[in-house]
Length: 398
Image 1 (spheres, rainbow, N blue to C red):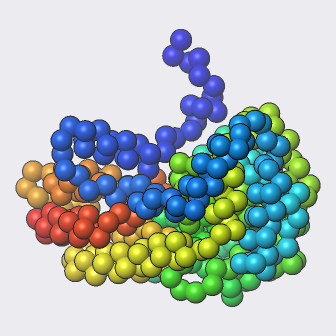
Image 2 (image 1 turned 90 degrees about the horizontal axis):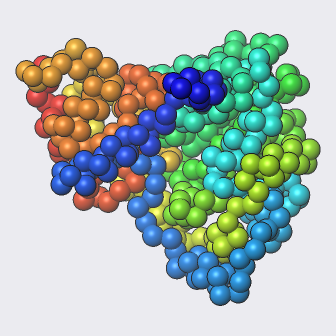
């Protein structure tokens, strides 16, 4: 019986972000006062106007199946948002509403990737990209970046990674886990490479769009030469503190949108009717709550960076967006506090969990084993406590 599971499932890795978060919660339930810096989840409550829209949807009996691709008013709201905020023109028929942005990613990857197709993924990357490609039967071509390049892929690296089997490039800006933000010029240079390869599509994960500390968000879909081969992935989880509502979406060519709808019709059908109505409010009402959350994330980033820069051995770029710091901790490999010797990024995370009561995620989960990820989507008080404990614990390593 031990081999009854499908080979595709056996080939998949468990999400280490979820695993570390669950481990942390288990320890907290045992009474340990752990500061959890693993979760990619805003600690803010959903704005009242959005909650009111959800309550009104319940009262108005929006309790039936919706169209597979989502209510038309939500798809119109998404199209309006893309036009208003990003200067991108999409019809509602080009929008597919999904059960979270991860579902939108899965739809697009499964619709595009065949066995033997390759997907180019710059590392560090979000944990699920490579596993979704594997699940679709494709192969991952991981392009390593470094702290010295601010964790961004260059055009030369992209050119070198493309083969006759290349079908997809997966980009995330602002980035989870590094916080890197590609400029318009950087994206345009990459788009010019993509334009030369007519079989190559771009999956542009823009879920952290509004958590941007360096100016206007730039979308890969703005370049007309490749727009029909770009799939925008976004959602309401991060910008509107609606992680539990599970509403994401994709915006792409009409043909690919129809393909994603066909796939979704067999896998899940529609996303929650109530959450869809709440998302209409999120995308059409006053954006002040989102702006206030972004200000708080910037303040928290500055707090974390001030402390990380005081810790000898740590190297960390200043994140330009999202709510993660991604320090290089390789200087601690081989060091010991007298009882524990650290060999790798997982050892560093376990050491911080045990000795500093701070939970983090190993960088190897993101394809960067010299680093760890720290989420600053928690209170200033928690962050200050975590930074003090981390500094003290790391100082004991020789």
